[in-house]
Amino acid sequence: MATVLLAVAMIPIAAVIGFGHRGTSKDFRNLTAIQLLEGVMYQTLAAGYNNIPFGTLNTPVDIGTFTLPLGTIASTTANYDISLSVTGKSVTFSYRPVKIDQPTFIASDASTWVFDNTHDLVFDNSSVANAFRVKKVVGTITWNEPENNLQRSIQMTTFLSRMEE
Amino acid sequence: MRKARNSRGIAIVLVLALAMALLIFGVTYMKSISQSTVVNPDLLLRAQIDILGEGIANIALLKFKELPSDFYYSYYKGRVADTTLIGPINTFEGDALLSGEITNFNGTTDTASFTTRYQVLSQKKYDTDTLVVTVTLGFRGMTREIRKTINTARKRLF
Image 1: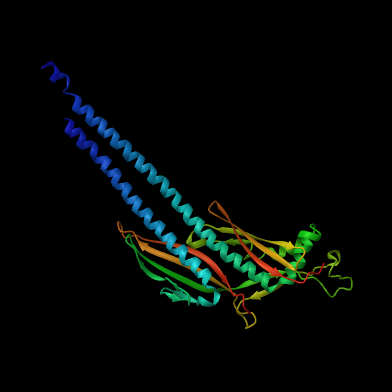
Image 2 (image 1 turned 180 degrees about the vertical axis):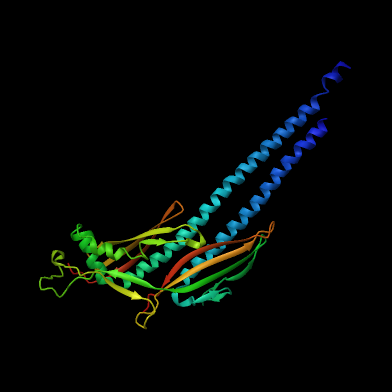
């Protein structure tokens, strides 16, 4: 009787422990993916505008001082694929300039400053002078869950600015 | 004979105690797993928001670099000399890419929102300033602030 009770009690307990282990493994793969992509995005920000080419990047990119680890990264828990999508981003900078041609304007007296209506400075690649100055970078990491072969992915987005003229 | 009869149920008691102990262990284990999986999405959100904030701060610095005098006039008029005239500095900080939203952020159906604020920390005895760009972002209930600080030099006008 006691043996039967012990055997029956073990079935749900074993199931609970098995479920917990699968959850831990899935959690670990998720965390690894977050950390891998976050690292690549910070490296991309450090690389700067000129070192990150336009297009879909899914192979390692040589920055000079380091290599951006894109493509497949093998891990003990899963194989991760990291890619970047880099596109030009049109930006419009709005501002209100001071009318310095006003006869009452005194640079050292803020009470005399008169501001004009809103002006726009546009970088939309419509001309050489208005070439893109901002790149939109979308990083994606994908991997397959071993239990059900379901593909999972995570995205992160950032922008790079070209400070040089 | 009497002693053997009295000890007959001890095995069931032991088995029930053992099963109870294992059950408590299993439930505790499941509880810890469920709590750690709640932390996971928060870590992802934090990373996504911080990475976006770095990018928006980059754009804010580009705008300052392209329009330095317009920034200084707007800033000093609205934040130092006459704090009632905030229109020009609000226009400067109010671009859609500095204070706006990104819908379907990172492949979700949700929207990320953000605002950008410039702050000049003047060093009055010198013609140098420290410019602080603060980007405040919100996504799925989480709010984060990203700050970038640069040193600038200028000719003081007043």
